[in-house]
Each structure stands twice: as structure tokens, then as C-alpha cells.
Image (tube, rainbow, N blue to C red):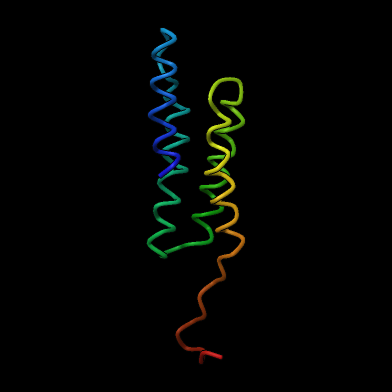
Length: 96
């Protein structure tokens, strides 16, 4: 996943600058990446994608002054997938 690779780049850049990575930022990335992974299982696709896109967008905004712009493709992909995901029909309803 793009966002997981971004987390590795973030840690490398921040560590290379002589600082330690922000735990809350990594937690935000993990929440976004994890919810997109849950959406891939099709258990709760739309809510998980919306939550993941929101987390990744917040992370991109928070990191915009360093490497946050690298997260934009993941945000766009999650948002497009959330917009295109339709709720599954109930099993009691006949398919049309």
C-alpha cells in the first residue's frame, strides 16, 4: 500500500533529520491504512474507505511542510473508491 510505504519514507526522513517520528502521526497513518485494508475485505467497504480517506487527508495536511504531499495519491484513491462503492443489497431483497 502506498500509505504504508509513505510511513517508511516519513520515518526515514524524520530520523535522517535527527528527530524522532511523532507517534500520533504514525498512529493516524496506521488508522488510515488499516481502515482501507478493512475496506478491501468488503466487510464495511464504504464507511471504512471514508474513515481511511479522512485519516490520510489529515495526515497529508499535517505533513504538508515535509513529505506529506506524497500521501495525496493515497487520499485520492481512497476517496474515489469510497465514492464508487455502493451499499450491498440486503439478502432478503431480490436482485434487480
